[in-house]
Length: 112
Length: 118
Picture 1: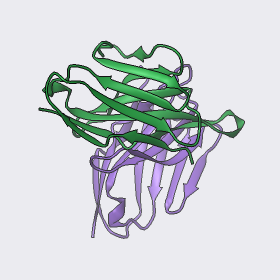
Picture 2: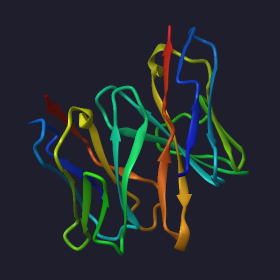
Picture 3: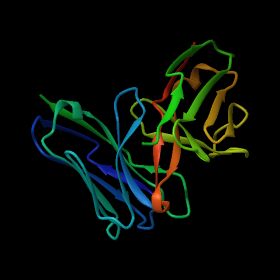
C-alpha cells in the first residue's frame, strides 16, 4: 500500500533554533514531492517542490531534501521564528496515480 | 505563480438547503482539479477528481448525488453540497495540478471553505 508518514506528529522548539521535519514514503516511484504548510482554518501553502530527479530545493530559510531510494524527505527550517508555527504536510503523487497522497502532518510550535 | 481562488471562505446554511463552492484558476488553465474535505486536526481526505468537460471521479464512500461537481471550463470547478445536513459541516479545499516547464508539475490549493450547517 502506498503511504506517506511524517514524524514527529508534533514538535515544539524555542525561537531561533534550527529544526528538521521528516517525511517517509513506501514506494520510491514518485513524480515529485511537495511540502506544504497549513495555518489553522486556512488552505495549504506550497513551500517547496522537489522533482523526482532532484535531490534538494531551497527557499529562504527552508531547505528540502529528497532521497528516493530510501523513501525519505526532510524539511530543514533554519533560525525558526514564531511565524513558522503551523502544520507542515508532505505529499507525493505516486507514479500511475495523479492524486496526491498526504502525510499525517507535523504540528510545529515555535516558542517565543 | 499559479493561484487558485476559492469562494466563499465561510458559509452557514440551514439544514436541507444546497451550497455551492467555487474554485477558479486565476492565471493558468486547470484541466484537472481535486476536491478535499478536512475534519478538525486531521489530514485532507480526497473526495473527487474533476476533469474539464467530463464527469468527476469520486472516491469510494463519497456520495456523488450529494456532492455535485461541475468542471465546465478550464478555469472553474464547482462543488455543490445538496440537501446539506449538520454532518456535512466541514472544511472543503480545492486543488489544481499545475503543469510547468519540462512537463514538471506540482499542486496548488485554494484557501478553503468552512461550511457550517445549522
